[in-house]
Length: 328
Ligand SMILES: [Zn+2]
Image 1 (cartoon, rainbow, N blue to C red):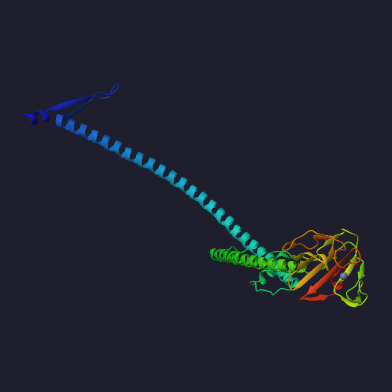
Image 2 (tube, protein in one colour):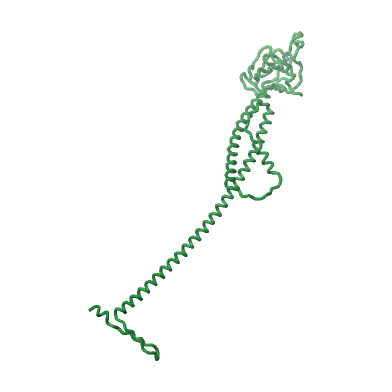
């Protein structure tokens, strides 16, 4: 029944314009459905293919844009990195130049130290090596520059970096050594300076008139030959009396022979004596500076008038103070 329905013939009449003859197309219902189905399938496939083509084309364009974008970013990145590498290479080069400069200055400091040690006649200590670099730098600094440009390889750059690094480490070490040497030198110089300050080398009074010299003389009281162990310097009552060197007061007192008197110990077996004072400004045990006023000139004890008896004792033996006094 259904099959018969499908086989039923349908006639389509196509009427052209004007005088054309009429066309008749006969087909069964089944054939019509088949034809319609075919057209629908064809249209479907076509639109599907068009869709796929459109989609893939758009995707390809998008991918291409992304790739282009990424490429330009990578190129920019590479340019920046190259710039950074150039900058770093320059930095390493500058550092290596500075290291050479510091090395040169270090050599000058060592030379200075050497000269200072000679001046203070101290025992010289060893202090590193490597003056050849400094002379190289000086040689490079002079004259013009030129020649073909050769790009620096990574290996060369690494070598320069390591050399510079090693140079800084060595410099740090040498600076520490130099510091230690200079501290030692300073201590030695201070000790030397202290020793110099302890040598009697000043006039103990303002007046520089010696009224009685060191050596044999006729005693002013007995008129008999006696030995004068110091010098007598003229002055007025209460004139200031100064310590001729740095030291420690070991006597500050009075007895009937020396009157008010002071003895200063300067170390190395050297003592100075100041006698017949009218007043004492220090006490036993006081640390005395070179040039410090210690008393007032007088005529106490076995004395005929205002004067200072000044005496230098070296290892227990009186010695002539005159060679110790500065020229007038
Ligand atoms: Zn005297």
